[in-house]
Image 1 (cartoon, rainbow, N blue to C red):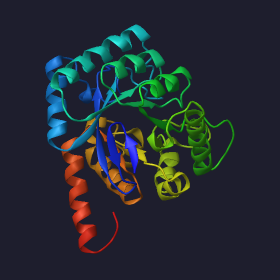
Image 2 (image 1 turned 30 degrees about the vertical axis):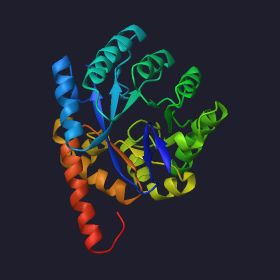
Image 3 (image 1 turned 135 degrees about the vertical axis):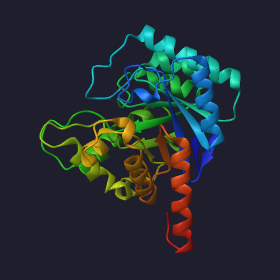
Image 4 (image 1 turned 90 degrees about the vertical axis):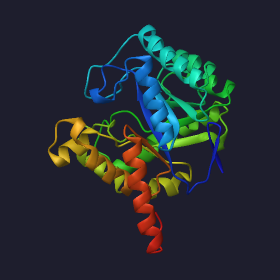
Length: 281
């Protein structure tokens, strides 16, 4: 068993993480929640349809957009979302999607239980903060390959580096989740969609190598747009659901999505079909 925030997770179990996006710079503008009411409605609906984690993000991290905001702005957005979540008092885990230790600390002080840092803990104090709060952390592949390398090799090495940082900082080994960073790694010598598809086709190898809970976030991402020739993220739901089902079949434990109802339905149907044919999903 592993600890995902307050939740005990079996290595073969699957849960849904809902994206609570309070960053107007997001690549998917349709997901942005601007008011307390919008945040509340989204969270309640997400929990109703099965989300076990709410992932709060106050600064977009899309690698192909200029989305940097100051720490003050990110903090203001995160505090607003955390206040709403605290008032709702729901029995779910809250993840903070940030690269800044100060933002992580504020979120953890307001009830967050997971630190989701897509930079591979570039701010080393984030791990100290997580340890002090007994929080789970997500070790994410990161960076830009400087020379030609096999995608699987690079991702495994990058996750390994983030994982070692967490272990050296004293994070409980059973509280570490891994993420191959679909959509974030963009080598100059290889099409990013080709890279992402290569990694998705190797998820079972990544899972086997680390034997830790595997988080996958493919929702509405650009590789789907490139494959489907659909530039509008709002029209990428079908592709997202396809990639999510395949990811779970390949070993994913946590599916990070903008669309909880649709994702939950797709996974339920796939699970029933696989169970009927005595296959493993």
